[in-house]
Image 1 (cartoon, one colour):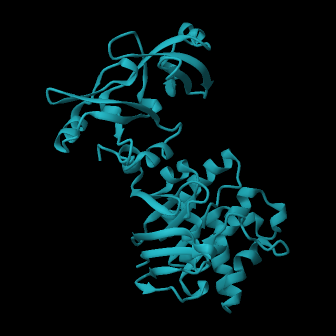
Image 2 (cartoon, helix red, strand yellow; image 1 turned 180 degrees about the vertical axis):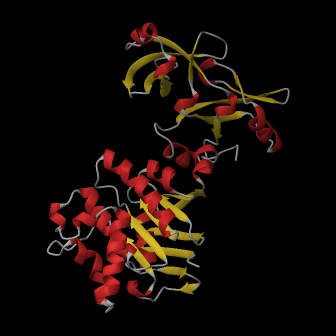
Image 3 (cartoon, one colour; image 1 turned 90 degrees about the vertical axis):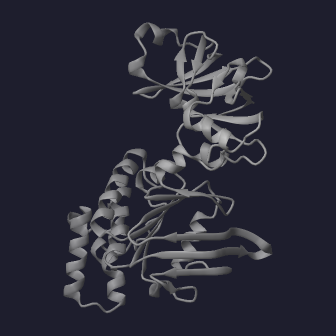
Length: 376
């Protein structure tokens, strides 16, 4: 078993600066958990406390059922891959990977077997005699991962390992980390500020803000059912559109009225509001860009003006202003390019008059004061 449990963990720096507040999380054996959030949210600090590189101010951390608060990093059964690779520049790739094994006085024949097996798994066998300066960023990252692999650790910790790579390499390395996880079949805790990495890699995502956990859930859960406004806007690219509007209740049915349109809160979402006895009043309406459609003029359509369009290849991102000049709200609409004819595409110029609509099934509703999702 290689479970990890954090109970009431807190990190306080000098002058009573609290970096992590009352962190509680249980990570199962062989689970891939990603900590994600903006810079300064406490995700790397939490990872470093698990690794033993940061002292815990309060609480307990258990690895494999053992409290490790007072154990040195080398005694915790963890392996860590750092953002900056942390390779020894004067050593060959082989010696970098073998370094921790030599510190433990492992026999050279065992070291050779472990290093060559790791290099073969990572596709870096031909680089074993090179120095790190002769490698690309992606190759260096593989070496750093190989150095962690040979330690036969219970838990893999990865601190923003792809942030120094370009976009193409990041995509490639994400796929390789997924394959590596399948081969190693161990527990992974991964830190990133990139929500795309979190969504593609994680079994569960821990979303953090200002040292607090905002939500823990599978990629599907945090995308489809965000607990609060922060999670809703953080997960998804482009981010969710948020509109201040009124919630109406007429004859037991709920409606929202963004920019004068009247849209029913359909299906299960309407039933949830009724079950929770939500009263009419001000709400924050959230709609993801991919759930908004271009439409003709109708009672349910919202008139808007095109500000700018971004050609993204397979889709267009339309930035539009909805509402009147005094209360205009900037929204983003994602439209697949296959859905737009040539003539329609030519008409999409700055200032063009458009109408947009969306289904009540696609909406999220948040309390404007607490910012909690009313539909969760």
